[in-house]
Length: 93
Image (tube, rainbow, N blue to C red; front, side):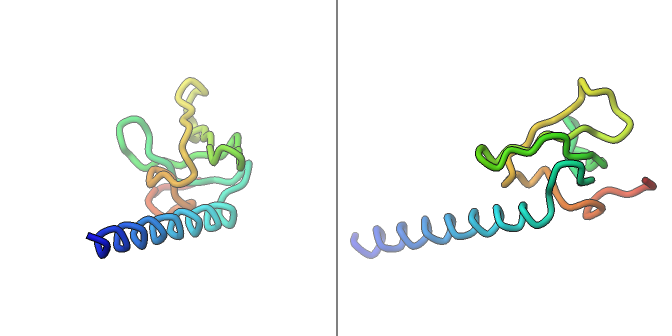
C-alpha cells in the first residue's frame, strides 16, 4: 500500500516537472506577434499569429492567417494544439 502511495507521489512529481519544462519551452518559442502552428476547430494544423499572451494564466490567443477575427482561438500554453511555426503546417507565408 505504501509503495503505491510513493509511486503515485513520484508520478505526480514527474508530471509537475514535465509541465514546468513545457512552460519554459513555451517562453522560448512563443511571444506576441510570433507565427505558430495551431489546430483549428476542425483539428487541422494551420498557420496563426499570437495576438495575446498571458504568462499569468498560461493562455495564448491566436489569429489564423487569412481568417476573420471571429475564428480566433485561445489555447492553454501546455496544449498539444499549438506548436512552433512550421512544425506541422505546410504552405507559403
